[in-house]
Length: 123
Image (cartoon, rainbow, N blue to C red; front, side, top):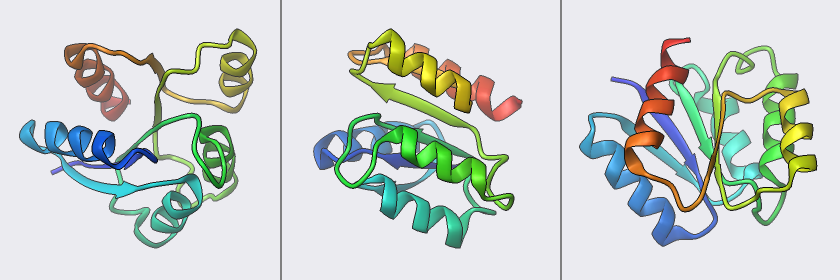
């Protein structure tokens, strides 16, 4: 079973995403910000197969999180998908330079999200 770390500061949104993913057979973990997510990855990185993160969060953006992930050789391999309302071309370009697997803009279609997750997990 694949494990997805859902990083979302709005707890109802995080819970909805986790329930949706669990109904599709994924195991999930949740974090409300990038700092907590990084701590979870550092401790459970071998168990996490994918990170699904919001861009705007308290205590560090999704960009900060992916930067830390890339600096840690133990978790650098974990794919990252942004699920966010952020649409600034400059921010997306900066994130592309750092490296991510997909950028999905909210509101999103669940079939698109699930397909992007499948693609990222296959890579």
